[in-house]
Length: 212
Image (cartoon, rainbow, N blue to C red):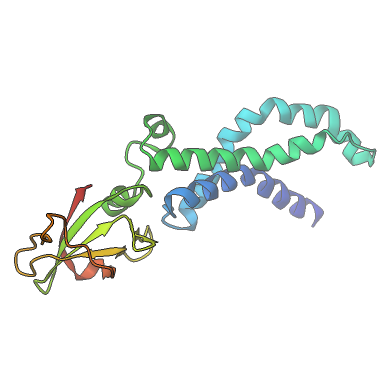
């Protein structure tokens, strides 16, 4: 039993860096893992890379410090920095890569691939600072329009993978219900309404996004 418990403990500790990196990454871009097996592979791959980077420190801890742990001798308080770094570095790395992926930084593609978003929906709406106008035609034939931006004291939102695709537009815009053309006020500005729109993607037939 001790050997089995020790093996499980070692396996868990070995996977922690990759798990922390993946969870921090997905906090920024959404849960892009398709399931438990996919996440385990990411944990293993991320842990392998991070352990390779930590190899000199790991060797020092094993060669010079582990015997003191086994003997119950007092440890240097500076070792806590290694423990903190073991958790902090993967967490920070995942957050940085996630934010860079959202912003489309070219260097992040080296780590996540050229097309990491699982759906075109996620690719379009992954940037939180994305602003624009949306007009869409429902399967019923009715056109709707709105602002994907911060408006009426709220921020527009698009659900991310793997949740059902729904879209919240913080401000509705008047459109011709038959042609979808935006309607303008007398001063030449779009007729932006105070209310918002909540739309399920399975009710939409066509969507157009126009950068503001």
